[in-house]
Amino acid sequence: MLPDADDLPDLLLDLAVPHEDINEVVARHRTVTADPGIRRLLAECADDVTGATAAPAAAAGAGDPTWLGERAAAAPAALDGYFLVYVFLAALPHARAYHHARDVPADVSRRTLADLGRGMTLHRRRYGSGGLSAFQASWLVHHFRGELYQLGRLQYERARLGERTAAAVTARADTTTGTGQAGSVAPGQTCLNLHIPDYRGPLTPTACDRSLALARAFFPRHFPEEDHAVATCHSWLLDPQLRRYLRADSNIVRFQDRFRPGHQDTEPADTTAVQFVFGAPDLPVRDLPRRTSVERAVGDHLRAGGHWYLGHGWFPWEG
Image 1 (cartoon, rainbow, N blue to C red):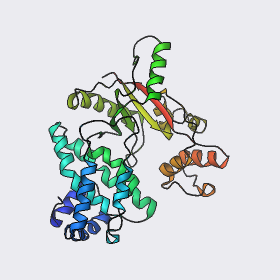
Image 2: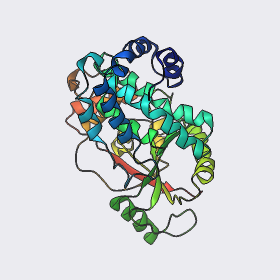
Image 3: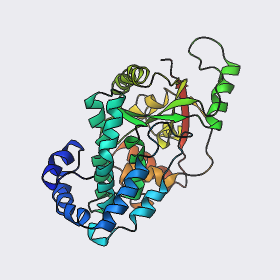
Image 4: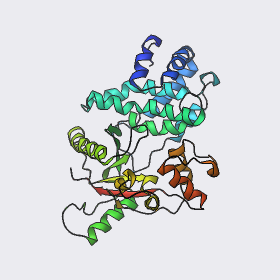
């Protein structure tokens, strides 16, 4: 189920695992393989990770497998935070086989599954130690099930429209005419949910245009049975309040300009904004740095008593 210890370093490098974690993962390999109980738990978790490869999530934002973290809590303390890393190593052959069956190019497969290393980097950034958190692991399930792909600057998740987004798209179609309209759509219809990964450079319009071009060629070829009427995005980066603080020609505002408004959240997502900008959700607001325009926007808004919200947007996919 796991590769030999001697083969692990090259495999970990392919998955963008940070160099400082490689020796730790190799050193704990025997702890995993020599214990029947750990092997059994590992097999159960790997089966859970790969159990829904064939279909997109039931709805946009659905399918968060909190059970994975609950299972991992039973792993021995000697593995520290690395048990979930071994779970994805065990699931890797299944994910690669699925990509091969879909004729996904090797470079797309490698860059998609390399989010394992990004997750470990984010874990160390937040906790100061190696491994993988249950939060990051729940996100990686989408990659290893074949639901999500890295195509240039952006990631694309094969998802299904929720009721509120479908209503927003249909309402727009009912009140406007002309080309470029998605028309009436129904909840549960397939769509593509866009994600903005960290450690990929600035979110420039050129990088986004190139990514969208790649995606418009990728999905009809590799998932021809799915009709994606719209692209969606659910992110604090779509909170329209950012326009108060950022220039109109900033990368974030120009990214927002691509989308038509969906439903509005009323539940604050302050910790989400703080986590993605500063690395941890529970940092004291008064101490948040002001080094960049985004840091100043997030921190100053919170210090003034404001809140950040998840924004929801969509645009016709057309291809």
